[in-house]
Figure 1 (spheres, rainbow, N blue to C red):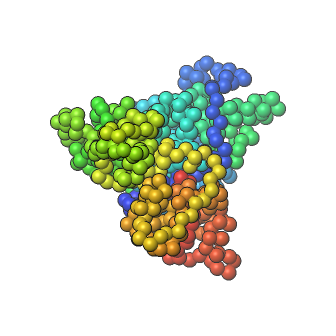
Figure 2 (figure 1 turned 90 degrees about the vertical axis):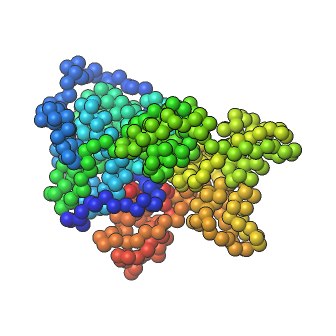
Figure 3 (figure 1 turned 180 degrees about the horizontal axis):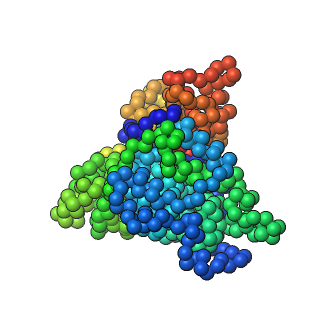
Length: 530
């Protein structure tokens, strides 16, 4: 792929739930800050080590003299160049898979200016602007098997520790502004603890308690206690080299025959105060932007509207911010949310009402403040009047809140249903009390697809299917082989094993892949890279 141009072209309709290589085989260890066995030198805490001080010319310019955001980022790189085989190995993969970075930066161009600005404002090395590539492929909806979410892949406990709110309406781990603040707070705290950025990065991945134990062991046995000599999990031993390899490639892309398309060194979005709850479709209309663009900029919201308890702010494209702010001032309080109403009749239940409107009892209970889920005849129930289908990535996020068993590892039997004459996808979904979107996704169908008598549909996927096929959403993925692809590179990109890929497609030593060939994969969308 030498000489390939990264033109940052990506189909807008493609599902972007691809997470990066951060696939923890265990939940990240989270512990209160551990006091090092040997207190760090006070003077070392006051000033960063000379090798990690930001370049003088960069500090003078403050990043303002660059047209290309990548040039601004490169000027702030501060890590020493290290020659280690592990870095070379990761670099080789990036060098031979430039399309992966193409997709990452296409997604990340919405957020990268903000991340770079926040990192440089703290005087931290600008290599950290590349950490979301390693963590999530710059996909704010990325979700890992260890329940880590967002650009910076916070697990729930660490999110709480660093002030990230998480409730029915909103998940601060996916909020671009809040999660970036929390991630940089965490990294700085880790550096304060260990006095070394590489150890801080390792601890961000595996937890500070693990790194501290490894340091204590080496010190006790008279061994070096830098990152390269610690006994850490294999994932962490690859995690730090991956970031260093990415820095090396980004510092001199022309050396590796890669030409990155420039990203303008200017804000992509503005933060506008909204004062109270606001429906996202209404916000998109007021801002003069698409609903999909608004969701991409505000991925922290789990539902069709902002959190009634805050944060009361929205990110909108910078060119639309003034118009949005002005339009908000003309909006009456009763125009911020659109609801239908339903009058409860005798013997009706909340679940039955939910089925009529293709929603769930949990949603109706929440917006009507009915914690017990009970309704009485004559009572008026609010029904969300959402005029567009929620994007699949938002529905998946909401489903994890509404149905925690989908991501806690509880065992679940597969339920299969045989279609009867006259039934539709919607009627079957109502019969079984599941969203029609979920039913379609589990069976690799579109919402408008017809079903036929005798057809078998999966109503509920088993835990075993999730584990054996490596899928969370039940999505069957087709991939068209490109020139230069190998079985190994494809399996790495989609985070499936080589054996699985071969088994699903009947590949053996006598049946090699070729450009244009279609491969079937059952992919956990939270683990796909790019």
